[in-house]
Image (cartoon, rainbow, N blue to C red; front, side, top):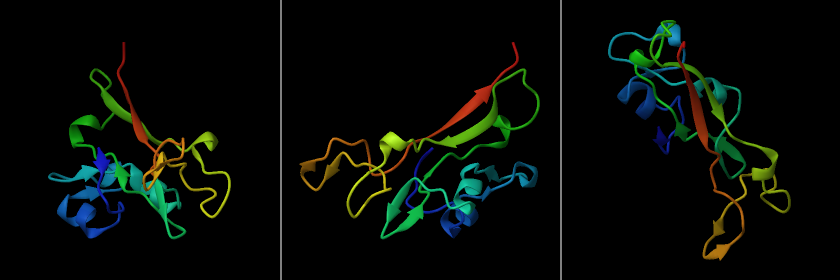
Amino acid sequence: MGDLNDNPTNASVRKHLGTVGKQKKIKEGKMFNPMEDYYKKGIGTGAYRDTWHLFDQLILTKDLLGDDRSTYKFYQAKNFNKKFMLQNTGRFEGYPFRSFVGDNFQGGYSDHFPVYLFLVKKK
């Protein structure tokens, strides 16, 4: 998990980190990036010059995937982009509501939306 400063489809993530966007396509030595689907739908975690980027990603190894719920397994990933976290006025309306702009405290949250995931296990 982290701010990779690249999108899920960039070579640094796909080729060099070895990610795939579909669980069914995962092979030995590859990892699953559930954030790729969000990115392809135009959903991002941060915006720059009116372009959304999804730099905040969750990368999962094969061990967290599958239907065997006797141990914790990946269920779902989310981008936490609720309305209260948006800048609602001005030039950056619709962007994440930032904590700081330069040295000036704005009262917001961050320049990126957080991402999170659900792991499930059978009782």
